Amino acid sequence: MQGENVISKEPEITICVLTFGEHPALARQVLGSIQAQCPRSRYRMVVGANAVGDETARLLRECHQARQIDHLISSPANLNKCPMMRLMFEKVETEFIWWFDDDSYITSSSALRKWLDHASKSSQDTVMWGQLNWCDSTIGFYHFNERATFEWVRAASWYRGLPLPSWRSGGKGEFNFNGTGMGDGRWYYLAGGCWMIRTAAIRALDWPDRRIEKMGDDTFLCEAIRQQGWKFRDNGSPGVAINTEARRGERG
Image 1 (tube, one colour):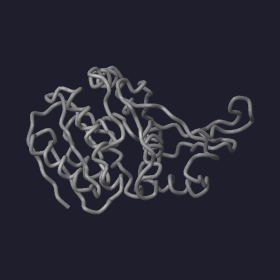
Image 2 (cartoon, rainbow, N blue to C red):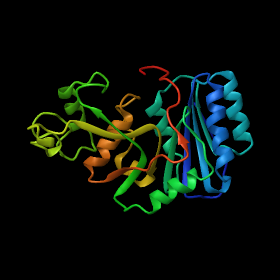
Image 3 (spheres, helix red, strand yellow):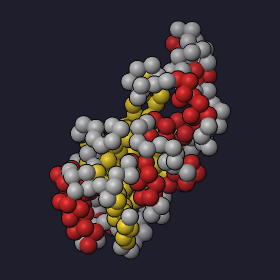
């Protein structure tokens, strides 16, 4: 494992970019979009390199040497998304974190301003912003097993006892959801490819949960936020293209 730093003036946000494998075009796209669309004085940048190939590694070293990257964390083996995310978050000292998977990128010079404006105008109990999605607890949720998932969540340090999403009566505290006589089984989350969050929330939650490698990290982060009585908001993801490639890597 290698960790390298470059000291820069303290801004209000750290942009975190996760790269993986030999996909230099994706790494070049996301890093180039940030450099082209965001004033360098406005952000710090932390990049995680999970088992990247030679061309990607060379690109990242060049960006680091040019002070376009403040912290570069490299692992020759694939640590997977969340373990690398923890290492990246250790380097953050700013008020906000703006997360990018390598297949998301910025498309507009107004993106940083709009995302930060939305965050700064939010109440203090709103801690995360991005593209809102939801999944059904019976389909499309990582081969969902309600009993096993509930046991897993209830064992989490961030669980506070709020009823979990379920179509069974009482799910999320609902007993007649939309007149169906059922609970609410929708798990709301912000798309994991790009989101912004208050660093204080990451610290309070000790996120990512050490039990998560990759699958469901975005869904469980938003559930952890809900459990604290905090809020996450759809901001329309202005000026950002999110999750532009198919899933890659181990375990999806």
